[in-house]
Length: 471
Image (cartoon, rainbow, N blue to C red; front, side):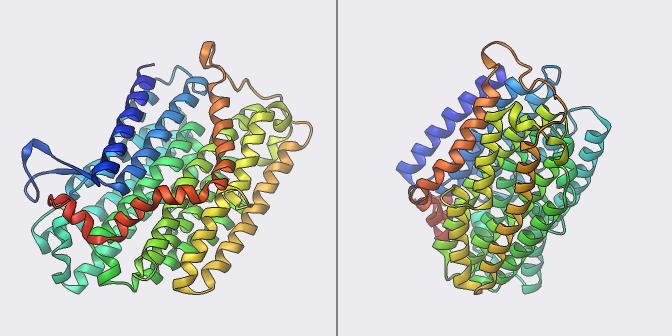
């Protein structure tokens, strides 16, 4: 109950912050009154608040679902969730590299605990694997911070932006590579994705939804913020657009093929997240060229928002199908659709959306990504998006077929909680499932809402002016 109260307070605080940023154009807070570049600054602009809203909605959804679905004996999950949410919020607001590094490490520690919280051997092993990858990722980020500090003498992101133009070319390129490797390891950039499927498989479905639907988006945010506002890639290295686009294409095809070969539902959803990180990269890759900045950023942000809803709906509804069948193996899901019809309908709607069937939300964001990417890299990204759509349709159809078949185990009770929370998990899954369809009909409205965020990223000097007090 304390965690749920904190979730409500968190949502209220984010709502107030979003309204203030909409009125003023951005907020800065210098801790202890020490202004940049000496002091630590927290920065909220139109781009930050998009991700703050994703964190808040993901937080509240997790808590509502968890009140009904999680075993009450696992009390550690609640405090770990609050630590993770605080760290992710810090990533969204950090205005200097050192504190960004601290928040990333804090999020990693909380994620390890959440992955291993079931206290099973598989969970402990997966948590250790994630810890190893997180340590390597943190080392890459720390080396990048050292390179930038040695070249510019400051750690504030806005102040570094003024000094990267005179960085040695080798150090500049090495920093970009380190940033992509560090955060790519966090959001599943192939071939740095090996931790993802074991971790999602071992963790509870609620935790997997939080990690994939929410946490992954903040690591994408961090690398995009640093590449655009700090490293000024569209100005100093527009050639990186082709690299980012190529990495996105590899993730799309590789993630979907791995999902096609998978026989476990939770691992399949993990590989789907790997693939959809690729779609997001295509949008931002187009923006990095300097030619399609506004369109590319809007497309990338649109898929970030829609994927957060789609993947959360899939994990929450999929959890109920797994419980109904007493198996996470796709072949073992027989009869689960009949035993939990509402959960299956939510899973079905979210699957159609994430595949990209019109008029669902996934179709709208994929279409925008393909349009922006084609203007920069030609027809190949469009072919890759189309191929990924077909492959994902095949493996989700396999889940539908198995779930709709008769027979199978009687499963367990999918609603262990009593009292007023008994139906909270089902209601959360159903609401998110319906949202994946409804958002497709208002896609243009969502794009308008994301317009200020896209401009905040596209207009590179706006962030610097905000931190320096010019806005």
